[in-house]
Amino acid sequence: MASKTTRPVLGTRALNRATLARQLLLTRAEMSAQAATAHLLGLQAQNVKPPYFQLHARLAGFGPAELAGLMESRQVVRMVTMRSTIHTHTVHDALTLRPLVQPARDREINYFRKGLVGVDLDRLAERARAFVEAEPRTMAEIREELLKEWPGADPQSLSVAARCRLPLVQVTPRGVWGKSGQVRLTTLNEWVGEEGEGEREGGVGEGGGIDDVVLRYLGAFGPASVKDMQTWAGLTRLREAFERLRPGLEVFQDENGVELFDLPDGPRPDAGQPAPPRFLPEFDNLLLSHADRSRVIAPELKGSSWSGNQAHCTLLLDGFLAGLWKLEGGRGAGTLTVELFSAVSKAGKAEIVAEGEALLAAMGDSSGDSSGEGSAGGSVRFGSIRG
Image (cartoon, rainbow, N blue to C red):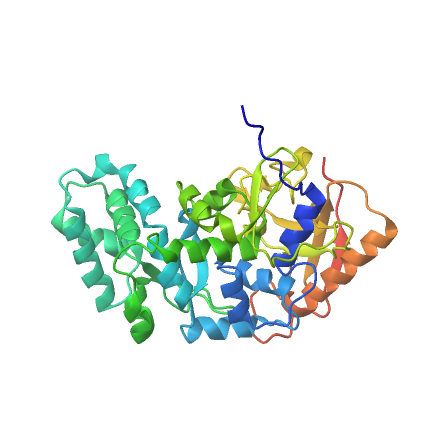
């Protein structure tokens, strides 16, 4: 019997530093907000403000107005993609990734089949498309429109089917820093106009499409296993794409023997390279995009960044989850409260305070003011140690 192939082993700290480098979290990048959104394959955007905080943690000189401008000029959009959650994507990636995850959206509809008895899903998609392309609509309005044709169907099931069958985007002012607006939806093509004319007819999962996404995933989250990418995308059966690409990839294993793939030129810094404190918002993809999250979250802290189904804002210290934070207060008087999971040295606390003050200066107005003036008069305080 042939012995199992042994690959070079990447320890937890080596994986941590490699992932932080891809995520632009070792050193803030001199990169535009649009380029960073593309590099990261999107920004988790279940709530309105997290994409802005994600870019502040990663980019030098970032101000909320930059991403807000991209939203208003329709160069980036908010829509459901990976893991059936809302992401902010460049138009190119919205057109690429939405078809990629269509099989998962089809499976999602299956969970609601009991409420869709007698509903022709193709007809539903046609009617919903015409309705939202006439003008952006709320989900309640979409349900009411579909109930006219299928009055016996379950209203929630109808709206889920419309969301899953169509590439629906949330139109502005929703998602714009400093502005508010009800969630209104139209199709991606209708919102971006000529930019969307190239929307894929079939699945991007055929041929080179999925292969390109695999390579980009490794560039943003690698080194990673097949299961890691499947967790990120909310998809299954990606092994075939990795096998096609294997000859051109570096292959490692983690300390548990799990096979990890990487780009040949992917950054893999020394495990001892310093990692500065970083404040990440709730639902940051760094913490959600691997099946094995021990490269960022120590096993004893598993689940500590969640309460029920609500994610907390998290603090990284030395590259790993070290605490939670929240920002409260109005213009010019924000307070950033940090709750650590364990005691930190005086020098470590000083670094946290310095990073927190930088966050307050750039992002500290919790009302979402778009002026970029932040909350220069705010303060950083430490709460009780958790656990």
